[in-house]
Image (cartoon, rainbow, N blue to C red; front, side):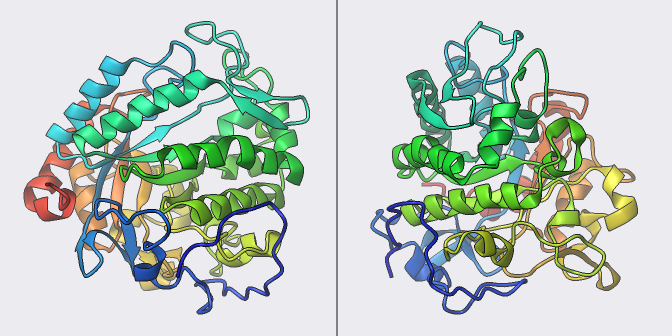
Length: 403
């Protein structure tokens, strides 16, 4: 079964009935063997899902892969515009990741749109975005730098989770985001969201979809704060989730790239009692945008110790099911990994123990924040002991794609 071509942003009335904790059996994405035999050539190096697992390799001989990962969110804030990109730094850092058993990293493809006076090289906005949040184009330097980034990733055999935006886009900061209001207006307009899909998401997908080391797109870092925090606009979930639905459908209908959303904690990532409802479930998104491709491929919640008092400790819990039954609240309809956690280890545990506990409890990976010490959560000296330890014990799960 081939994927449908994304022609326009009209809601397709096809009567989807996805359940709250799973996919409708009529969903064309149900068969993984068929999903990845799309018009795009199948690549055995591409990560795909297989039940609760992530796999690579031939369709008739899938090999499990576990995300022994990190976050390398930026070297310079907004690396991929103007003269910000440092090719040598990224090339050397990817070599360092590979040497230390890291098989994937999460990178912020755009941190904001360079509104503000703190940009390192004085570059202006690289998205042509008007006052109403409509997107009209992208600076060519952005694409050129991303060409280099994905070439580096492929050369070193390290997968990229590309994060499109963050709650930072929606809150004021005189140094790097003095005009968050355009982003807020964009989310509140289906036409403006469609312009983002047309002028950013689809060109991104069409340019990089044949590189298997772009394994996933994280549409937004911690959208929870856009909903909860006054300084980020306190936007209703219907605006955020419509953005996720329209972009997810476009990506999945035009590529084999997986899609996720890096939620800050499970509060808005679960439909179980005691949570606020899964705002990125198939049912919630498809109620806003009737398209069966508006469905995430895997869960990637974040965890820091402040979360434990309400939702427990994920590394010592299974990702799925109720807390009373030893779960962290997620639905068991797709794989789950920890998209962020402190590189210094959670309270009472080393980072090595966190990685090993996550593996033992059925998580499909951990991505520590960060490999390059962008803040107080630690850097490579904290991370690489854990990634080396896991790789030494499970090399077949970290680099099964070695040619």
